[in-house]
Image (cartoon, rainbow, N blue to C red; front, side):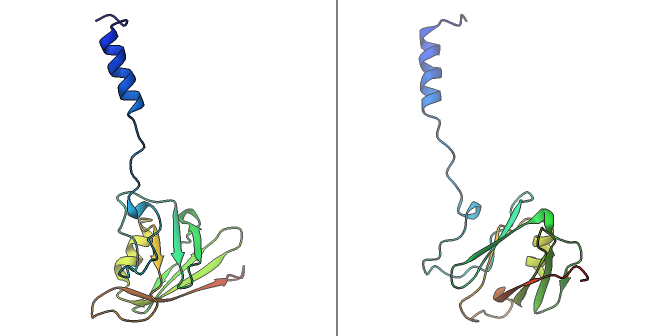
Length: 141
């Protein structure tokens, strides 16, 4: 078929002008903070992500690059401790209950955000993040 076919040109022109960017999925961005039901963290992504965003009760967002996540993290039944070794190293402690899956997904770099709950209202076996702390890490740590 010759390249100067008018029908082909019109089809290609229509296809090019109809191209719209794909809609953003809710999980790709931060969750809406408009009183929706509490969700402790994003759904696990299908592939590794570049950054982790931690949302506090007052709406502040603390962001960290997964590339800076140190391999020396700890898990207890009430706390996940992560160390991000960027230009200013920071220890992040995520307190709550039923945090094992969150811990595992964090180390797979598959969680986009973690949200602190306004109060502790979780049912048995339900994941909840009750408190998050950030502390500067001394070089000796």
